[in-house]
Amino acid sequence: MPKVKLLLLAFLLAACATNPYKATNRSYRQQVKAYARSLRQTPLTPGTDSVPAPPYWAGTVNFNLRKPNMVIIHHTAQNGCPETLHTFTVTRTQVSAHYVICRDGTIYHMLNDYLRAWQAGVSKWGNITDVNSISIGIELDNNGFEPFPDAQVGSLLRLLATLKTTYHIPAANFIGHGDIAPTRKDDPSAYFPWKTLYDHGFGLWYGDTTGVIVPSGFSPLLGLRLIGYDITDSSAAALAFKRHFMSDTVKSWGDQESKILYMLYRAYQ
Image (cartoon, rainbow, N blue to C red):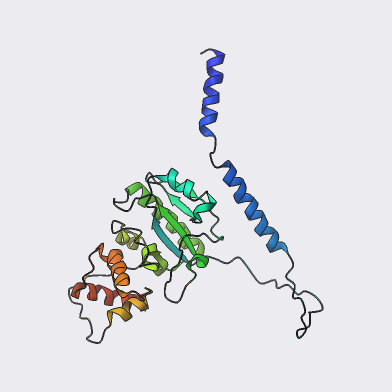
């Protein structure tokens, strides 16, 4: 092959390998450096009129980084990973996640796990109202109206295993965006395989309900609240529960729902 063609081929290959996110990666590094500078500053307690300033700084030697204790799973509701990567790399969207997993199983780690992503929004789980501050957000490339491919679920399971081991995250703390924000979100959709995750140690599930007897005094609303759901809008909370545990998007509530809820309520205790 002539040298000119070889040079042209090399140029084309180099062009294809160019990272389109060089500029935003540079911004990422600049922001991280700014936070690092803040951490290096000596904490000082200035005096006020009624509180005297300490004579010297005494820094503790017993500390480490804060660690995430929850994983929130989303679907992107977009059309492909390139669209989602773009969404998370422009400031006007004001949204982000720690990880994005494409349909083919490719994982993009977009934010250090110790940093706070903007993925949960206005949400609540139990008494936790700032979910972003204690959670890792994982976005799955899915428009919300289709099953999740095996390659994508396989990559998710491997990632979850790493996160669970690294940060000692309890099994019950792997939940969905729709669980923590039932009035606003429905992701991941009813197509998401929560039972598969449970079989691998992530999230809770229930067993055979055939012989389950729900006590006459059991309150479904209390059960939902004790599991973690925000019951301010009870219908939204019930629907979020059904979508997660029954792959059901019908609002009606019957004996089977009560049995499953009762079993899970006991599991969460």
